[in-house]
Image 1 (tube, rainbow, N blue to C red):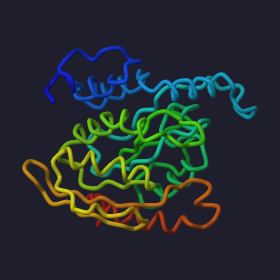
Image 2 (cartoon, rainbow, N blue to C red):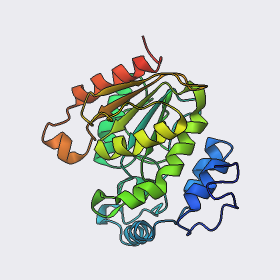
Image 3 (cartoon, rainbow, N blue to C red):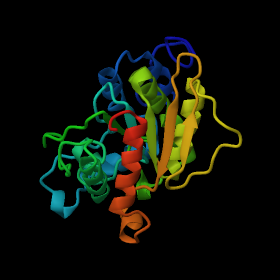
Image 4 (cartoon, rainbow, N blue to C red):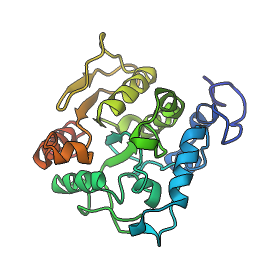
Length: 261
């Protein structure tokens, strides 16, 4: 791959299937990447669904103008810890335009981040609510809300260049990554391998609390990859993931990232 993208040509149109692969490597910073992500129309099924939801809001949100576009990552550009989720929720991030904002999964996640000192407040309601993250960037394997919260493997592959560019732009300060759920785990590991970190063979299976230390290689310093159950309502309502479990894991990730002693 060269500086002009996967195919060596211009970025192309937002609706082209290779728009992420052509565009993401050209971005010179996270602000530019976020702006490009928000323009992407590479997956027709996801475009149709996110816009359909935006045109048919829930009764509780009928006064909202839905974002109804791909949702960029959120957090400081020098974050030492990244948290990677599955995809925006139809009436959460797809409505508010910010990752994990406006839904129950986000309430669970940000409450835990706040409890361990990585967020300024325990709630996330909308983009102007004053929420700040400390040393953490929250993103997702897929940037558009998918039907039934289930992106296809092909959609994950199409979106992967955005995640790869985000990891690259976070640079050498990135020390740890938390994958929320198996989908994010399986999206993240190929990105890290392609970025130069040596992955063990066979690749470790996903599980809550799994920790994968990746050794330094070339200009890449060592990186810790941690797995957590996704804070979906199905997982939290059944007790598969409790607040204490998530707080404990995020505390460990913060230590690995050098954000706390």
